[in-house]
Image (cartoon, rainbow, N blue to C red; front, side, top):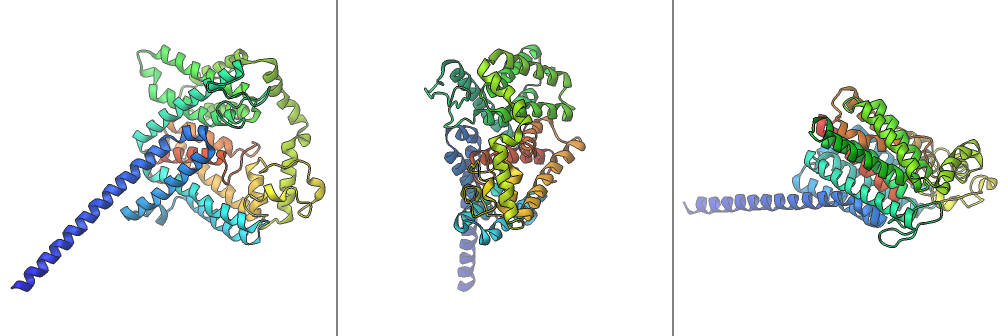
Length: 433
């Protein structure tokens, strides 16, 4: 009789231990979830403070998401990956393969291995971190940060130094709180989520203070668009205008009258903040388009295409442009005129780095993202709240737009935040696509 009692006791202790372990695992999952959401919430600020800090936060969120999946034994996001993730994983594997033949093998491998953090981070936003409550909180964080950054930039434009004493980058370029002149790029990416989200969350047509709300929204549009205009960054200004046109085409829940009013606010802001220097720089875009072959960007694009054609199937390796551009032994030496750290064109960067196969893979990735949003829009399930991140993502993928590096730069962090934000918003409405 004693033996069964001992077995029962040992069995009971095992069950108790299992329950305690499960409880500890649940507590750990809760802490990981809270920490990850907090990091995502402050990403709009980290992107202003330091690119390294933002990239580190993205890496931590990706690692904590993997740990959460292990503790919760939930790998559904990997077992049944979305179409966009299949393309991204295929791209990652191809990046690892072509690194064997890269211009700089060690650097290509390191960049390829690290690139997976963006994919996991995006999956974390889509599958776990951003429910409806946290989507609203992220919007609040982004909106407050964008407005503050814009006001800081306008202060620098007016007085030569911003709130913190940082001087402008040059006579025709603002830097705001950033170390480099990228305030316009930041506000362009934030513009659509902030403005559209403000309209949706405050819903002026359902408010007793509809006129006041519309005035506030108009002022915010003027501040954001005015700062983008005087920043001296021409492509962000053009993309912000294109984003408004895209919104006008896609809008159904948002009344087009309000979009047109927003356009008038932007024109007013442009005339209000304009000075001869900033106006001349923006208008010089027309001249640059007529003489595009002579611009520095066009010369970098030509060199990127030349490097890609030197190794058309495998490319020069991930992030190889910064090293191979000035090397006369690669491609045609007469193409070496203007070199940057990257080609400033996302599709040429993929072609130069990963060859034709990698470029096809990236186009497949971009089309998969586009189909997700268009399918949701066509079914009528895509709420207006999602149009902001949608517009920002589509504008960055616009083939004729200049762009930052897609492999590990500040702009890559901003892009993947917007993509994860948009995917989470779509998933919250209609589930997996």
